[in-house]
Image (cartoon, rainbow, N blue to C red; front, side, top):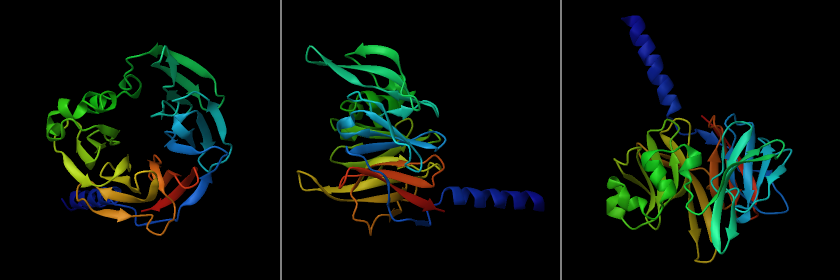
Length: 280
């Protein structure tokens, strides 16, 4: 019995540390800067590389995790919008073309090393992003129907008519964090139940424990972003910690590395990618 109690205590301590917010973090450090503005960083599954896109999601660039060997692997419009790593080698991309004044979206596989592009599906007018994300049910509805999702998902009906954007599925698949336009940041169970407001926030990015996430709180004057901070929020307790309170950067889109030790973000001030090291 004593041995079982010791093992149980060890497991509890381990789970507690896994659910903890970072104890400390570095100041933002410049990671990647190019002649063109860069945005929307995305980590490879093994954390060894990072993909970014250009202004208006035009093109895709890939660099090592330390920012070296930056290389453009796609020039297509829309290529970087919600791109994701299908493996440590390939990025799934959904660029578009304009045909007869209609936007036609296709699916491509982009080799992150060589830039070789392989067509997955032809361009179509009625494109569903969930066909390339593997999302299901509620998350899929949020991805495919941002305008109608609040009406179609029972747990969100009190916000019917409001757009849902930037849905992020937790690493363990049990929760979804997302924005309701003009209402702030929310989290719910994967089936749409248990809706909880996290207050003002945008662009959620989960930590590996699926209990904490990063978000940005952006301030604008109606024309441009004037300030922004990154917060780490525990979705169970609501406890929030500002990790950029002394920085002059204006973070917009954020991405947490697979092991949770690095946070990358695009800085609206100079169009460069920065990184923050997280310590637990």
